[in-house]
Length: 241
Image 1 (spheres, rainbow, N blue to C red):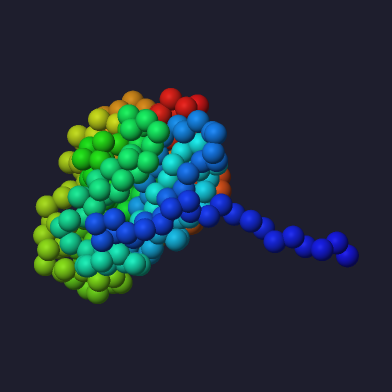
Image 2 (image 1 turned 90 degrees about the vertical axis):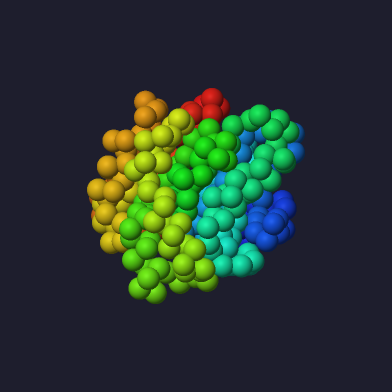
């Protein structure tokens, strides 16, 4: 029988801690033109490693990618609190500092609570576009926080106040950049109607909503076909298609 060969996957080119936030960064192969950057945000109770698959995908297409642990998660310092949007902006600035051209487009891609934060932080981070997968609702996050359903370390009073202050409907209505929303119709945590309502508020004519039958809250983020659709959207809105 022929010998099996172990599969090899791209490893992060850089790992570290920036302002208390643990991150991993991927660079395209040497000599390849860099198209831009993608900041990847995980959901509640998750960690950066859960989204290495998407980081490798966008790296293979010529984008720098950074995934990081939100506070209260993984290897990052301190509880999750009202600093969350500043943390997203800090990771965007770190990634931009590694781009050969700091004016190159940068995209935020977030899942669940990460999608919620990506939408809120888009303007502050100078994003050219946002990809939000099953973005969480502020009311649902507050219920989960108060009921102990969110499994991470939090400054509960500060985070509850943050959720109360930041409503996605208003934030999406003010977005100046294209938005891609992806949602499983079988999502048991965040109803698909939430993304449908947000899609109707997005001002950019380049914004899109993709819903898929069945599935569950975590199924969309790792689906190869939907990851490819996200990459295609990123390429189109950043002028790289």
